[in-house]
Image (tube, rainbow, N blue to C red; front, side, top):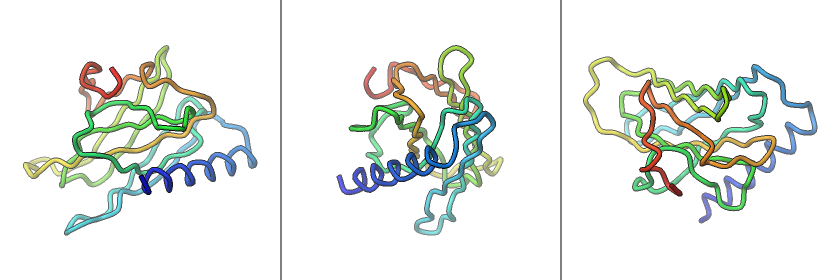
Amino acid sequence: MARWLALLVLLAVIGVACEATSQATEGRVLTTVFPGFNRLAPLPVVVDDRTGMVVGVAVAGGEATQPDGPDFVPGLPNAVAIRWLGGTCDHRVVIVVSRPGRWLVDVRTDRASSCTLAGISRAIVLAMTSPIDPTDVDVVVDGRPVDRRSSAGW
């Protein structure tokens, strides 16, 4: 609960700062970092917003049991959580947000080519300029569409 509250405050600050400084423009690039833990290095995340509608990004907590895909963020209608299974060999994540009709969030992970180590549940929150319904978002992870029926809220 405390994590969600901190996330809400962070997203509110990001939203106000972005709104106060400029309007959203296409081609915006945002960054965040998953903190390192145990012997894993921090994992940089680059969000390539091709819609001009993403105003903030933050690492989200969450239960490891949450399914992959898009999810609602309680109390934040202008935000969507994106969850996927990453790995211990991940070096960098690039997330491309586009809107070729429906919203598309394409998660691309750079990782060691022969990695067989354990998976790690990952989640980010994208803050948008207007309300977004997670049921209108398709998620692709490393070239594979996420099965919408296994996502939360479906």
